[in-house]
Image 1 (cartoon, rainbow, N blue to C red):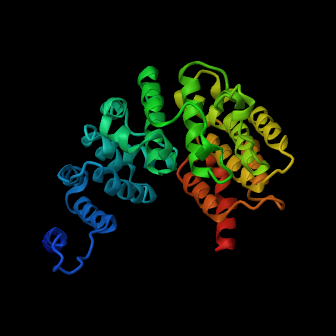
Image 2: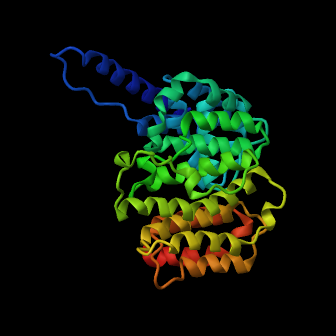
Length: 360
């Protein structure tokens, strides 16, 4: 009908623009209008509306390069999460189980909402992450600065939650995340890379059956030659203090995700005390560290399905209700988005929503 006519017109526009791009190699040709991912996302969304999950997957399967499956699929899956259309997401995951880039998009979007892809849909993707040379070259280890690294880590965490072989998950992690923190992770402003690194460290430890990693185990060894030692400023050391404060929460989260026996019974007070002692040992007590720790704390609550009302109130008192701590609006919205979709976080909803409305 009419919708398919519009879609055909859009595809015709796309072909015309791409033809202009080819002509751009000639100096006499005008500068073409570039096709952006945002344009293509709408085409994929239209295909989903017209032909359902299978039609959308078929559409993405025809695109190249392959990573367009992730770049276009991720925003579409995120929209479906916001709309609560999880049955369609599960069908997309099943139909597209042999399309690793799409599977990564699904796993990443669901992880933000405290959910996992359907069982049996990630085996192909794990093999891909463990063996694909082209992806590993593009996602070099220093590219922890690249947000796409988050999606890969989320996918490997989902593989652990589905009980896929721990040795294979660790082998894939080793290809994308360094064993020791580099300057990107330890820097004063390494928020995104630091979170990704600590999540990977925690998952490695849990899959290996190891104890909670210490700060020393996460840092590269100091050179024996004193002349080669690099003097680090107080600002540089902020990142190290933050690593020590984050690992207790992400280690608990990894144990919960992997279904380790007894993980759900670990008292959150103990975790909070270990995190706080590492944090408070830093006399500077930077507020940015507190923000990162609050995010890590909530990420553990998302997977602690038996969390008590007292524990949830403690989180609210330390973040939303705190007079001395400013929990930024963007972070509160992320908390609200997850709590609205997870029954065990129902006690957070009203307070967090009210705080967001007041701020807006």
